[in-house]
Length: 72
Image (cartoon, rainbow, N blue to C red; front, side):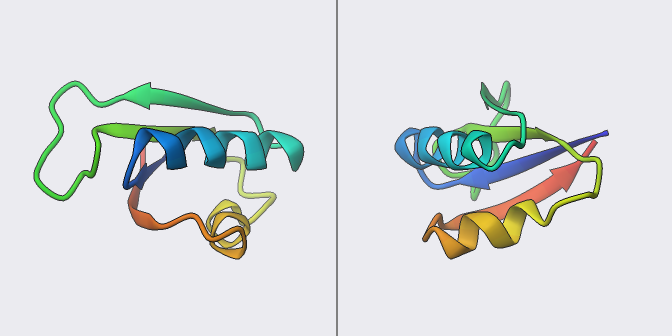
């Protein structure tokens, strides 16, 4: 299962990826195929959701604005 984190810009997506990688959490930036209104820039941060670390909390502590997230 993966966690897709919606952020406001490609810059924030890249920053989030870097922060998570430094915290030993594998993350990547992917483009949404059909972004909806409210999905921000259309890029999301994809994280393997193993439930062992609170990814959202880590990003908020680093001032990354999160528009939402989904698990798939």
